[in-house]
Amino acid sequence: MEAFNANNLQRCYCNEVVGLTTAWTPKNPGRRFFGCRFYGKPGACRFFKWYDEEIPERSKEVINGLLRVLFG
Ligand SMILES: [Zn+2]
Image 1 (tube, rainbow, N blue to C red):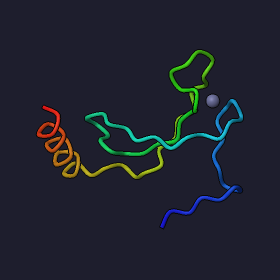
Image 2 (cartoon, rainbow, N blue to C red; image 1 turned 180 degrees about the horizontal axis):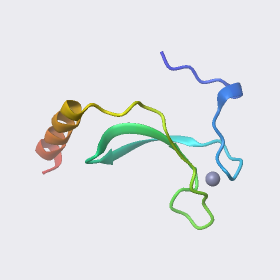
Image 3 (spheres, rainbow, N blue to C red; image 1 turned 90 degrees about the vertical axis):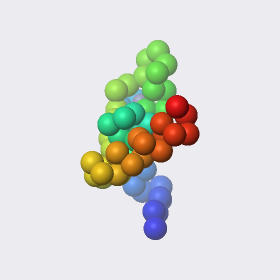
């Protein structure tokens, strides 16, 4: 069970509450991370922190295989 409460919200270097985003890169398919909510926009900071543990190699293979099937 994932619990979020106001006391442990992560903040980035802009002092903004960060968003939880899912990575879909071949190295980290489906792995979630905290990132600056302005990520990709001018002035965004470079805050980055993984939320999930690293995905086991076997799981990466399976997930990447499924992604290829679904999206070619
Ligand atoms: Zn920021």
